[in-house]
Image (cartoon, rainbow, N blue to C red; front, side, top):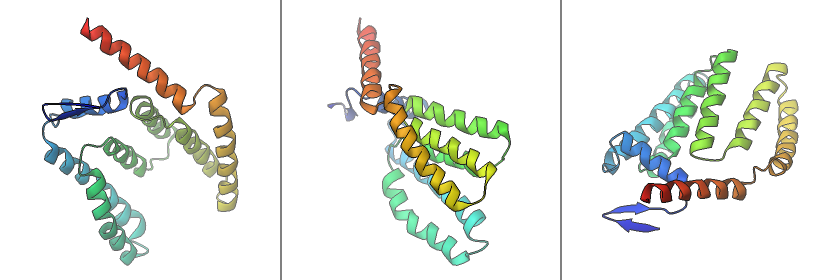
Length: 186
């Protein structure tokens, strides 16, 4: 880790570099308060959407409690520079629940882009796809739970065999990042 002129630079982590580039693109690289307000604002909107649409109609007190209880952790966790603000945007997209095949494709594509650029969440995306396929075929929660547990076991076994071990993927990303960085210097 190195620090110059108040900016902290994390060596060997292209995902943090990508987050920094995104904040620079938005003009928030030197505005941590505005970046924090953006992150917390998106968080409040997503929590409010969940509470009012999904919980409050049946359980108004639970909807209000969800909003109140989540405010402090949301402010602490997302009230700063964070790549998880992008997860909130994906969550907001998922909340639309359009249900069409095109919408599901858009949602999964968005998740894949996030996984490729910011975090290696391919296993979680694979589980999401299995869950959505199961939900189309059955409404039995016990059957869905059983299939999800089995899918997690199978995918956790297959991903390393396919070369998607976290350390190997991270090492490859670091090598690419260092190559790009050294090319820029020359």
